[in-house]
Image (cartoon, rainbow, N blue to C red; front, top):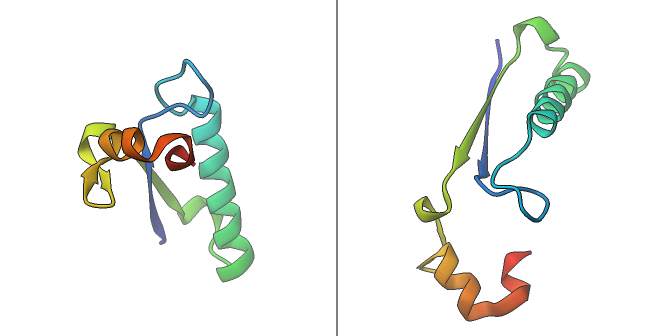
Length: 79
């Protein structure tokens, strides 16, 4: 029974959104489950996928909180 945990930032993929949409999460679950079926022959019914959304204040990059890192690096840092 595979258990896959996906960590994503709590930021939307489009301007004005604050988190991944239900449709985006469903696509992640479907895609990861299908990949395990295709590569490891793990049945879809026995694959568990957990999506963990991390608030921006709870992660960092380059030794800094991510918002500060982005301010210092400019537009290139948000990629």
